[in-house]
Amino acid sequence: MGHDGAPAFESFVGGIPVYLDNFAIKCLAKGDRALRSRFVTILQRGADLLFSLHNAVELVGPQGRSAEAFKVFLDEVGPHWFPVEMDPSVVLARESRGLDASSCCFSGELLKAYFQQRTSAEVPGSGRLIDLSGDFFKLGLFVDWLQPHKNHFVDQYFRFDHILQSGVKRGRLKAMENKPWLDHISVKYFDPGKPATFAYYNLLRNLMAERGDTLKEGDGRDFFHAVIASAYSSFAALDKHWKRRIETLPKPNRLARIYYEPELPQMIADIEDAVAQLSSTNRKSSWFDLTPAVKYKR
Image (cartoon, rainbow, N blue to C red):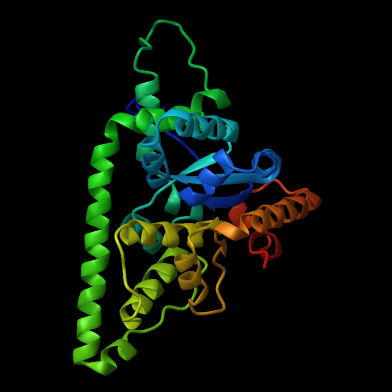
């Protein structure tokens, strides 16, 4: 507890960070059971799932068998997940202040609200203990908790789309009117302390330069997925267009290795190799202290 009696959380990713866009969550929840079992085993042996609010809200909608399949898979994840902030402006501001990696990408306010709701029936002074075992933070329960708040976050999606599309449109028009303008926007070089800053500004610059790359509904949300996933995971599943966009960013960099849907089995195999390599080092430290060979396996 903090000085004001409110809960205080200290979170870090202790293993290899993995990010799954929702297509990958759906594939694992409803598809190949053997592949899903391998992924759950990976989490138990030394990886953590970076799970965002965007993930959760998109999974709230399905009903019936789909909803049950998602719930079962998310509960199998157990406590091996980390609530990741998906608003790049928040993450970029933290990076500019020189905060450590976990502090930069941690969505603490969301976790506090969840904790307060789960413990709202507990009366102070009752003498009852709150069980904070892995079951308390089951991912399926977390998604259930978000159900009443879904419409609020869907409205945010439309705002994200508008921000990205209007910003890129203005940049493209300016580049057409003044061709050297884009050339004077400096390419950001990779700084290990500011990986999201690198991904954000270079992705935005490239989108302005590629006038034939048409943005569609949902790309505002996917842009934020791509920035945070590439910056703060070692392995990430994104759709094909965003995989291509991340892979065209300036090199050298230490962004995540990106996979799209047909490559999901290969992604699982590569994470298994990385977890085995991590285990062989017999180290117990947070993920950003890992050697580059483990964290950024290519």
